Amino acid sequence: MEPAVASDCEDMAGGMIAAKRYRAARRLLMGQEVLTRNGHALLGRAYLGMKDYEPALHHLGVAAEMDPDDLETLIHLARACTASGRPHTAIRMLERVTATRPDHAEACEALAGAYRRDARYADAIQLVKAAEAAEVRTGQLLYEEAMCLHALGEAAGALVVWDKLLDLDGGLAAGWFQSHAAALQVVSLDEALRRLRRAAECHGANGKYWAFLAAYAIFVGDEEEAAAIAAGPLAARPHHSALIDGVRALLPHLSADFRLFGCSGHLLRHAVAAAGQAGLVLEFGVRRGTSTTHIAEAAGQPVHGFDSFEGLPEGWGSQPQGSFTTELELPPVPANVTLHAGWFEDTLAPFLAGHPGPVRFVNIDCDIYSSARTVLTGLADRLRPGSILVFDEYIGNQTWHEHEYKAFQEFVAEHGTRYEYFAACPFTRQVAVRIL
Image (cartoon, rainbow, N blue to C red):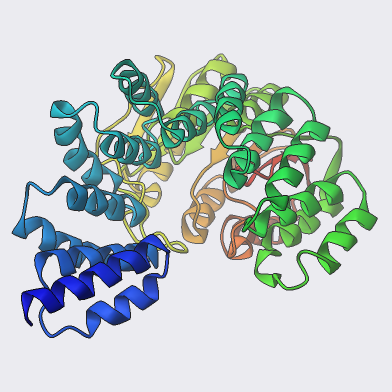
């Protein structure tokens, strides 16, 4: 292809990508006999915009090899790594950039996002503060800071940062949506609903915001409001019904003291406090130790955390096998925590053989059916009336009924177990269960 022709084609593709016409850009670039370095970079960005990550990684990787000094391509490649479940790879790329260019806004944004996706929340917050010291202040960095504060359980601090961001961009639907959970935790349900409505009314807003409004309406018994949302904004969006279906599945077993939460850490501490009987405190799915720390600080006794630290043993939704790995790195945890590295089927039985007694509390953050089933089967004769279970991905995902929910429902059917749900956090998809 003549250089001038290639340049014209790439200019057109770049304009399409800027307009988020990713498929059109892909068609245009795929029609070229030979791609230049810039052509590969643009095609990779088009695939990234389409959320088709493997070809995005391929083409961006080719472009990066052809010109290792092209920071723009490197940053897009890192974003593709993060989006495809490889944030640790992105972090290695981007830390080299920010070490020499702490004032590079896009690199800082991408690295903060990779830290967050790798559950390295404190590192992300520290990066944002360092960027601010270098006079790099962007809306995306505020977004990352607020998300990470919330993930650490600092809902009040997160809400302050969300409001800073929304002062800058009052039409940011994602900001209104994300902030509703912090508002639910530290202000009120009414304030959370106000923010959700602002999110839903923004131009181009995600339909899931209406699903959250319907879900909260169901929880508080406002079936008229839930029906109006289902017949109105959600009528043409049936793919957003997963959360609503999950909430309805909880209703027959809601406890008299049921509470809604907006923050994972607060729900975990509440659930541990509700576990009044003596026994083992366990967690399955430790990763970076964020939830482990909340549990350990609330439990007042030894805590045992189980994780392979190799990521998912199989694919889960859009997450490929190996997602959420720490690359076998064990996280720092409080002194009362003992970590048991390995697959659950290899570590749980030997542990139980040396630790008699019932389960006081267990956090089942397994995500997938097979792992949750392994844990519940292993603990079957240790669960007693008063035992507390928290499931981390119980409702809300498109496949919610095929994983932790399915494993628990099979378990209670097989063992005749009576139970009730006494807390839920729709934002994080968590539920807390009391065995009766």
